[in-house]
Length: 137
Image (tube, rainbow, N blue to C red; front, top):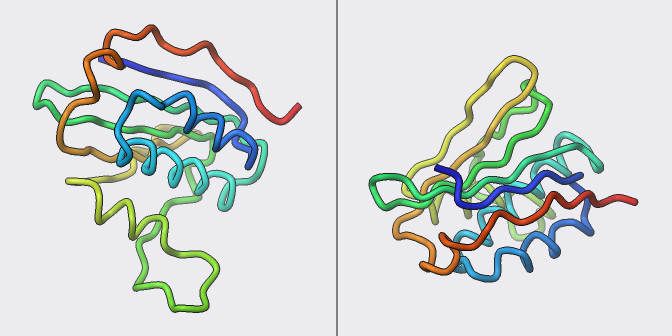
């Protein structure tokens, strides 16, 4: 059951806007969405169409999903980032926050997902889905 969903173009300007739209969700949910969306920008390309979904599972966990149209650009958790590395911390952060995470490939797209403990606030579950926002004018 999707409680929130948004289609957008993955651009650096879209990231803070999505974070703002998720103000009812806790910090971990917002952080995971930000990291997954940033991975689309960095590894698939700026302006890539993406879909963000957040669902409350029957287990009470919160599932975050980000789908993009490149089934070949798979996330890879590497060793720890060095002190001077400019990237490489996003998936390590996601791995530390999430109870579990993974990738689902389906034809010409992939969904990177993670599950977090606890449910979003009740008002977030009852809130209507946000309208589709397209960034990258």
